[in-house]
Each structure stands twice: as structure tokens, then as C-alpha cells.
Length: 439
Image (cartoon, rainbow, N blue to C red):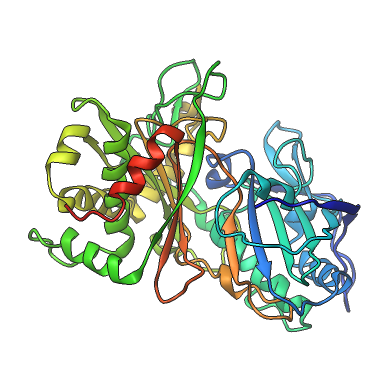
């Protein structure tokens, strides 16, 4: 994938308030505990649309309309008078870039550093969301988007994008985002049922943390390649059957089975010492976990914690696939309502939080011996329709962070899955060779 792209315009786009007075300006929106514990960085997404496509002006108008309901994206991250970080709802705007290429798009099905040309830079932006529309000579449209993770998680972002498509097509935006943070009030008295230091939080002093691995400050990092592994639904069915074969109470999910498979593959090609501990950081959506009060699916913001299954490398490779699947299943099951409520109480306690910082860190380049796995299988990314139909390609941007894995629905459909697996270049051939082995 090679492309010559010309940036034609770049400007800030503000919300447009139709049929009602403008809301109060300069409102400080506090961050929830889930906002403050997540990754403090922009993330990038790419959507590819076949022609015909609506004009940029119409897509921009849809964006201005939807920003009236999702004002956070047009705001800025600031500190209030008490020194707490928050979102200032000042309608400063979203970065909107128009670009074009004199060449046809060509294939875009393999991860490439050229992806980074298709959206504004991930670093150095004060805007909380940035959009780039790139038109190719073949008529294809690429929407590149970056969003600040402190504002919202992937589930919220996908709902926002579906709403943007509706606004562009002059359809009502339903459901509207839910923002009532009272569902996150700590209990009185608090119940610290779990110790969150060493998992979501760590001591601020320099020390090995829960993620392990090397930091971006490391002087030398071997070349890293993002390998895209395609798993057809027929193979996934065989994988689930094998993962669930040894006395599972009920079959493990496709995600649990595939994650177990990838964990073992990566551990093997990394050639870890058998006594070394390896673990996965797995995102768990609180919207399906929290109760009393329940968190609605249209809650806008971050509502994710993590499960941390771990194993000795030798056990992971010598035991059957079902062993890894059980570790993953049990760890995810443990991140339940009690765990989420304990986290809220813990993060709201000044005593507990003294000297702690989040473990989530996107500045790492190498996670070895560990992994992070983010599942986007249930996000409605393929429902983002601006009037010319849904995208025929959806992909995360190019993240060459060894061990940072994204699992997404394949463009092939039919329940097929694509896994984006960043590996050291020297490990890619080994991964390819054993990728479909069920031994």
C-alpha cells in the first residue's frame, strides 16, 4: 500500500444547534474514575467506503449536528480550580481535514505505516477528536478518525459514529448519549473488596509494573511488524470445540477460545523461558456487568476495566488449549459488578489513591512477555453509514506496539475474524507457520 495524499484544507468544526438555543458555554465536565484510569492518548480508526459517496460538505454538516449531542468531542481537556482534570465544554471544535489523491486507493487489507497518512497525527493535538476525509481517483472515500481515549471508550465511539451517519442522513439521533455519573457514586461506607494496586493502579515510583515489558524510553527496539491474521468461521468453530473439550461447564466463547489460541501462539514464537510468567490485559465492558444501578448500553464515556489471566509459559504450552481458555474465562468472569463497585470505592478514596498512577500506558513499545487484547467484535463499526452505504473496510490504525492485539470482525463477514498482532519481525514467519495449528 503506497499512496500520495495531498492535504487540501484543515479547520475547526463547531457544533450547530438547530431549533433550540445554544447550551451553556464553558461547562466543566468532571472525569469519571473510568476516564482517569484509561489510556491517556489518541487512538486512530480507518473506514473505507466504495463510491458513490456523499460530498464532504454534507458529512461535515452531519458532524456539526451530532456534535450538538456529543459536545465532549468539541471541548478541551483542562484542570478545574481544584486541580482536577476535566473536559471543558466550550465548543472549541473538532479538527476537520480534507485530502485527496490522484491515484486509486488500491488494496488496504494489510496493516501498513501508510495508514498514518489517512488520519491526523495521534500526538500533539489539543483537539479531542480529529477527522480526515480522503478522496481517491477511483471514487473511494477514506474516513480517518482519531479520538482521545480519556473522553470515551470504543463502544461509545462506535455509537457516536453511527449517530454521525444518522445526522448526515437527516435522521433523528437515537438513542441519545446517557451521561448520568451518579451511577458511579462510591458506597457509604466504602467496600474495598479487591486490591486494585498492581492491577488498574501502580506506585508512581519507577518500578516493574503490571504490564511488564519495555517502555518507549528503551534505547533499542527490534523492528516490529503488525501482522493481520485472518480466522475463518469454520476454523473458529473447530477452535471453540477444542477449547471446550476438557470438561467445560458450557462452551467457551469465540473470543475466549481465539484469545487462548493467540496467547499460546505468541508465547511459543517469543521463545519464553518456561518459568517466566505471561499475562494478558483484557478489556471488560462494564455496561454488561454493572447492576444496582445498572449502566445503560448508551452510557457515553469510558466504562472499561481489565481482566488479567496469567500463567507460567511452560504450563500455557504444555497444557491443552482448554487450560488457557479456562484461565481467560475465569479472569473475565471475576470482573463482575462487585469488582466494578470495589474499583469505584477504591478510586474515590484519597487514602487508597495516595501515590498511585494508572497502569494503562500507550507509550510502551514492547509488552513481552505479556499481551493486551482488545475485542471490537460487538461494536457496530460496520453500521456507520453517511448515505452511500456501510464501509467495506474497517480497521484500527497502525499501532506497532509488540503484543498489543486488536480483534475485529473481518471484512469477509460470515462470522470471520481478523486479529491484528504486532510482533517482532523475526517472529512473524514462525507465527504464520503455526497460526492454524490445532495441536
